[in-house]
Image 1 (cartoon, chains in turn purple, brown):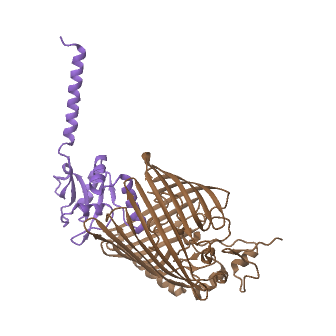
Image 2 (cartoon, each protein chain N blue to C red):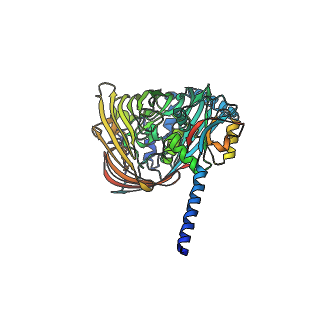
Image 3 (cartoon, rainbow over the protein chains, first blue to last red):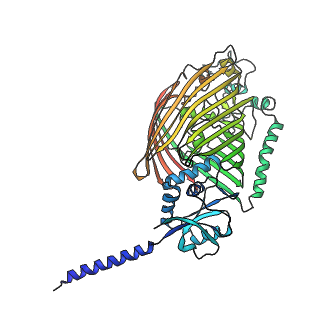
Length: 152
Length: 421
């Protein structure tokens, strides 16, 4: 005969497995993509150019000076950006862009904490470059995906 | 009544050693009133004002320069309404407390509060950029530059800029938040802090960064313009607002650096400068026995980050040529600072500064004003800790042992610094 304690243990394990599978499926297949306006004539940007752009240096495409927009609508986005795009820690990145501002008066990349506002800004500016989860932009006709920056 | 005489460098002036015409600065001193410390960088006296038109930039020249600089600014303001313009505004603020043993007056580099205001406006390839530094004792437009970016990361600037052959100042400028240590190396001091090397030049500056191979880069900066004039105790660079007494010679400065990562934080390179400076003070003229000098600056620097470590070092050989028959002089100064990032957003740092032949130099002695503070540091050993306790805010403490021309002292500094917004 199965004791009441054993039943509780099994139930707890099942619950844990269910919770884990839910969390995993939430991030499974996640892709971070580089985005521009659909009206933009920006060609493909390699990772070196994307890094320079988000570090505040000048990057051109087809004669247009590109403008980086930072997407900080969620914490994981920022972490992936720091690891995979600029390859710097949060504090080093912050000091770097501040330093460029102090040295040459360069504009620091604009930060967006709302995904909707970011996508609207990218859509409205042919020189803007940003990044977002693919699920947030794949069905938006105003946005063109340049490439995948990171995937789960 | 007991009379105390003013001094210039290591020499104490007496009425007999100050030849006529007596400078009003000295006259004011004798009358027991204090000399106005500054209007910006200027230690302005009526004597200066009278001579400004004749020996400095003439009023018409100043008008032309200011007009030339302001035209693009006005244009940019209009263009800023266009969607492709952007502006930048940042303020670096710091508050500092200092204690010393044996006690001495605060150094000129130690305002208890300062704010460094950075403003920039970019429209396509044009950029207007300025730095305004404010302390309770001074306020001045330290930099004002109008630039055009010919190709990506190659800018030609016109205006007043920090000369590129200073390893420390071109990195940190006047903002304290971005420098880990509280103090700056003595050889990198600004002109109004009895700095030995001219730092603010008015003219043209070319800055370029080019890629080498797949990752690395080289950086070149070259400046040409008007050097500061040499007064009794310090250099007086051209100010864009106010008078510019004295004659300003030609300054040529440059830096060539290797960047292991084009967009990284490490670099190492060579520094070079040649400044022709004119002596505008009779007392300084009497000491140097030369009405002008040519400063040759030859140096090398590194600012290298290796994981949690950062090393900043520079060495300068400074050659001072005088008019004959005064014999030439030279001295050496250098420093090495090591920083280590620790847990809890703490950074430990230590710096060693040393010099050679500075004590024997008549030129260096000019900058020692006998005010009782630490003017020209010959050697310093410093160690400290910085805590970045919040975003863009830090608390730092620094303990150092300083040997100057006149005194030795232990100093303890505490600083709060921040960048806003």
